[in-house]
Length: 469
Image 1: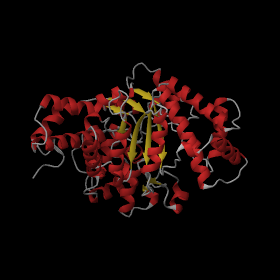
Image 2: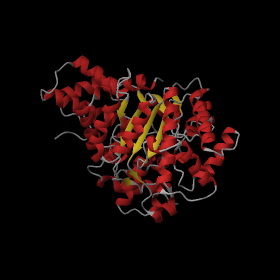
Image 3: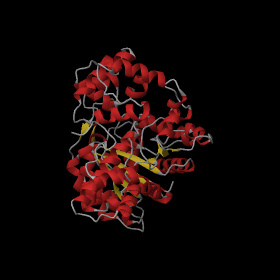
Image 4: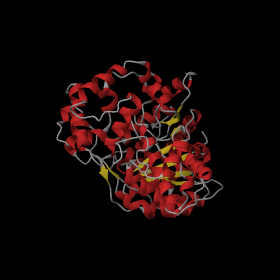
């Protein structure tokens, strides 16, 4: 029987052990997609206790607690911080097979040097020890990033953002990690939602003129792309819960203008009108990204805010989302093809939340590769509910079978927590074990140096080259 979470955790063969310890373990981290707060980094935030740094904003942990019967007051409500921590400690031992059990103990081990398992017999001592250590300078936001060996962080930012905190971070010569914005214009694409018109007013304030036509919207968006680019941005991100896209041979700019002005008048749009608007905007944005050499990220397949009562009580992004099951292959192909037809398809990373769709993406990316860019179109790493052992393995095996896993840009945190960088260790161990299995089964030659370089490329080098940062 193997010891729990020893130095060879998740490494089940000698090749995997060698690949991880000799090549993967000490590579820097290129976190090209996350939801960390630029303000908390700029202000080098300190954290008052473990609940604030560990449970605050982490809907993964909240779902575990709810499944264990914890009342919402002790999750997102007004219960004392200590009782929230104890509620999580009581739930965690029941999370066998859940990646949270591994992530939580890796975080305790790597950041707090705690080897004990968290349960109700150890919770009080762990609470006290961790809180005492949080008082030191080693646990500020910047210190945690530095300790985690993070080279680049790309946050997630609305086009209307001033990026003032990114500017402040850049001015700190003592902090070596690059913290760059990512352009996420979802509110400007979801024209059918009640958030669209208020967002449009904010965009008008950002650019300094009224936006009374689709042409002016495109002008404003391009200006914000340029603004973000000048602040170091090299990626966009789009939450395409459902891929609404109509091939542009079936849509005209004149139709788009009519639809946009109809919205300005407060009139409701039909589903077809929404799709036509989204098609025109996504196509235009893709061209802007290609012009600047950016990478476009597409996150496909979330079914959000399913619980109306809890959405009204605690708001969005609090753990009441799940996997969608809509079909999208034709719409996604048309989006990529329209951009490729004019040779304006940017580098693109496609993430899917439903593992059913892995082979759709594994084959789709091969349709649009080329242009002298290795892995120009990427199958993004296991995302959200697939950000666990089986999900990662399924994604990587699909990519390997249908494309080139050697050109994969690897893992990202997609997290709001400064302790979540252990997920890169988790990924790297799983990656090395997968490669090790192929070698030990005689499916790939045992060439340690070449395999090691390939592992290091996936861990860091590919992303550094791909994003050009």
